[in-house]
Image (spheres, each protein chain N blue to C red):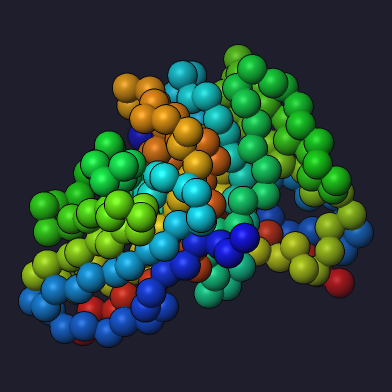
Length: 114
Length: 116
């Protein structure tokens, strides 16, 4: 099965909060990431969290990690039309100490309606 | 500091040809990873290089290869192109203070390869 799973679509109104959810399977993953991809562009790192943390806040972004359930979420406060993009959750796989291999979910397309 | 750069940004090739893509990491970054992004398979890891050595490899056929130079710049090569190789190829760099670490990966804009 998939290593990382995300719902494919999310639609919110401008000014509301958006919550994008992700589940992962590898309990040994040390880092969990959120990336943003706008049309025709590469991946922009939004934030990441260590697996020994349960929450991280960075301006409008809040990441929550539930290690027991292997569940990660990204909350965007006061969502703006410029936040419309595809959001990818990713975990680091540890191969002999190196974490150069990111496993990505399929991405959640966030649509923000004015 | 300049970000990760990739050249060319767009490329059109025909089946059977080979292609070389280039990636220049952020200055001081020593690890370079390559990913393939397609609508069907999503983002998939190809390989990672550190200090001119391939450190990790994904599940791709031997037609996909890469290398890293002493200045950390990296190239990937795809030989005998197939229609299914059409994709966005993304390169990511990370600091990697030593051979057992990677740190956060920063991505370039990608090279869009179309195989006709």
